[in-house]
Amino acid sequence: MTRLPAFPIVPTGMLLVLLGVLAPVSVVIAATAPSAWLIAPAAGLTLIGLCLVDGALAGAKKDVTVSVNNDGEVGQPLAIKVNAILLRDSDAAAPEVALAFDPRLGEGGAANFTLSGTGKPNEFAGSVTILPERRGPGTITDLWLRWRGPLGLAVRQTYRPLDIDIRIWPDLSPVRSNTLQTFLRDSQFGLIARRIRGEGTQFEALSEYQAGMDRRRIDWKASARHTALYARENEAERDNQIVFAFDCGQSMCEPVGGLPRIDRAVSAALTSAYVALKGGDKVALFGFADQPQLFTPFVADARGFHRLQTAAGELDYAPREPNFTLALATLASKLKRRSLIVLFSDFADPTSAQLMIESVERLMRHHLVIFVTMIDDELDELTDIEPDSMDAIAVAVGADAMARQRALVLSKLRRLGVDVIEAPHDAITYRLIDAYLETKRAEAIG
Image (cartoon, rainbow, N blue to C red):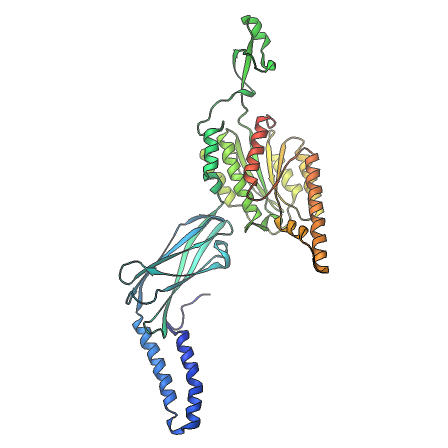
């Protein structure tokens, strides 16, 4: 439990050094001139008195304010600003700030920084940037403020309890990126939904046959009635069901590129979901570990994207092995029509991988599956490193065996007809969007 410091005035390192130097001097004085032994204690008391005077001259705290955005995104910078007004001369040393907060808000759960003058008398301001490491609620709990006196012998310090709640959401920076916005504006899935003729299976209209058209589009009955060749124009498939399924188990909680795999997966899924909603399809989220965690209703419009973002923020980190059999059977029972299922997962041992393959095989009987996994850079490094000891050789052999097992599992999934995406964490988003659009163009979902 954090508590108020017992002493608001504490000595600086300079004072402690002076007292340390005074100790051997007092021994020398006592040995050479016993009658003058009072000099050393008097000097010590004088330094302590100057420390108290310096602490009084440092002044007191008048006001301290902390400002921070109550919402942030995992892996994205979050600025915390502190303003302090002190009852003292503004030309003295700037005050220092220490903050304590939930570890999910930043590495170590603490931040230290120095304030600087604002140009106004006795007013100081500063900020620190933290990088949230996990989704969910976090709290800034404590603030310490300290500043030196004009003599440099004492430090005045104060403590203030805080209760500032911050909600950390999934990272949506790819959705806001210029690349994606340009793509949505210029592609067939633009900001204004348009009917795409000439593709798909839903009949739209008849038009006169022109040279170069696909002959399979010719409507012979209509051509016979009009005594001219007419071709069918179809509308691209819409209203498909897309389910993003997340393995929230132990393997997906491991970090990759500084963030848990599950957070990388959520960011990629939400970006792809945004594209799918713009394209007129329906999107739902499904999360599981040893038990199903979450299944959202299908969202059919981009205006409901916030519901998906909120639901994704509730996906929990579960340090347990996932139950693929239960989870995917539960998902299949909830789907009443053929859907595209995007499964984000990883595997660490052959047993769980085999159970996953069997469950995906049953799912493939009625649905289309895309399997997304992130390349393990650490595993690749351990495999490629040149060992220089027996322990290093053992590590390299073990890493190579795991890499071979991984390749075998992915090969089995591909043989089942699963579209496998294996890419670095910063590339899976656009690889997934490409796979979704290709599947949609092939009219393989509905």
